[in-house]
Length: 299
Length: 43
Image 1: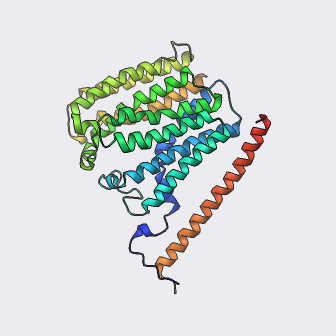
Image 2: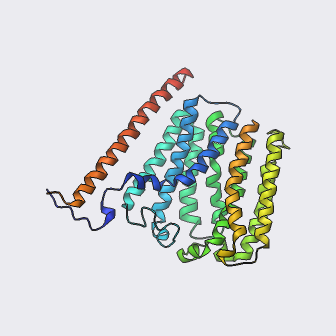
Image 3: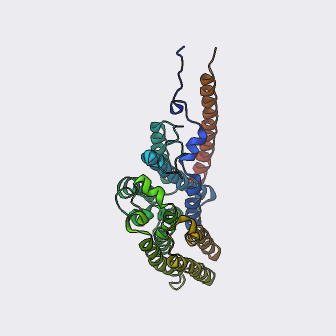
């Protein structure tokens, strides 16, 4: 029997918990939630098992994105405190295992979506995975400060996919839901990147605060909040939702705007004095959950 | 005599096999219900 010399932890079989960590479960929860809301807001309800499978496929697709993102960015992750303990930079997993896991999970999620619901939903899921991995992770993120703006489209797909899984059609309301998340992504990520910008700078990632400065980022956060709020309220005057959603969207967006103005007014460049940015970041997560909950309740 | 590394490898392999078995079992059950649902929709 061969003697097994284990000097490198990555040469051990990876723990299943590390495979789970590759899927970024916390990010997945928001994706699953928005996908579920897209599905529940649709005028036609699929059978429970098919709806469950659609959401499972969206979750698995998001997991595939997380795994492939971590495989590609293992070296960068090792340079940032926030990400240095992930399975690959910490050396707990073989990079090839992560790659195989990500590709298999992505392919499996698309095939299952196609078989269980419809192939338009499967095509949208495939497009979102490819967009996140190839357009955002590989192409935009290391090259341009606009990475978050265009890359945000990948995270905006789930409600559209949920809706199409239920109906088989692309309509105006799910397109507006796509627009809301697309426009929400820059203020959300730029608020975070303001108080962890030294991490991004150390890793050489051209996030907006690193490239264009703190003041300019604060201005951009405010400017993106305006169309985001307009997109959030728009389904109501367009007659796509009821008053309950309209009033909720107005109140939630107004609070978002107030917090964005507080960020705009902040002059500090020290992360310790960035309470306004931290509040906006935390609120932005609540905002999306609350807005989409209001949409489902209203339907 | 097994080294501590051998024990860790076996432990990881056992755990991995159990998780995979559970997932495959769940997939078979899911596929069964998807088939029933699709059949009821005259797929």
